[in-house]
Length: 161
Image 1 (cartoon, rainbow, N blue to C red):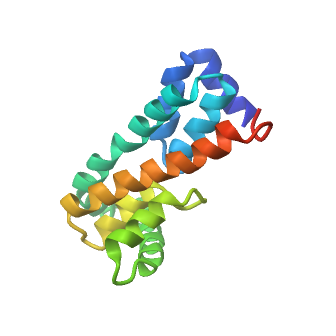
Image 2 (image 1 turned 60 degrees about the vertical axis):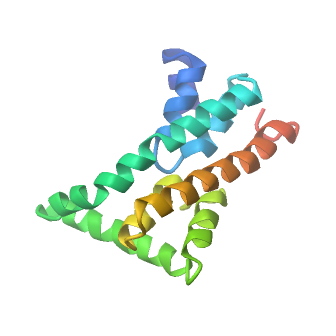
């Protein structure tokens, strides 16, 4: 983690680094807020930057992921990766049950490994949830995850810095 922190802090302005980190799959807003706290960015500014960074890729994932998967499935090495991602989404999606939008919100909101906006978008594509229904649930989930991570990162002294 220190190498990543040093790379971003020594290469980019901290605000831009927090924004970019929040765009990345897996780390998303959770990692962006931790970085922002370590870099000394005030909470309000960090929250806004990280939220915007995390939400930015979601419409593109919702719009283009099915087409990208179809194209990648034509090639043997990437076909296996696509199948693995689809299986991961199906497992996560089974937990949604009949309350698909509430389940999607919770899947995105709980800041645990394997959850977040990218996973929520993947699950909504795999389960053919309409974009106009999925996007608000994902956006609110990212907002909730930001609130949880903001409390943990900025308001529990000594936890990350």
